[in-house]
Length: 37
Image (cartoon, rainbow, N blue to C red; front, side, top):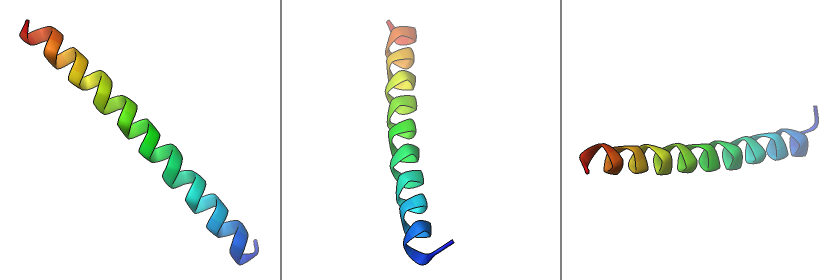
């Protein structure tokens, strides 16, 4: 693969990873608050 292709793949992977972590954290926080109540 060319250099810019690697850059695009890594960038997309980072964005997807960040979004996935954000959603997982949000769901985890909701479950924690629900369990505390």
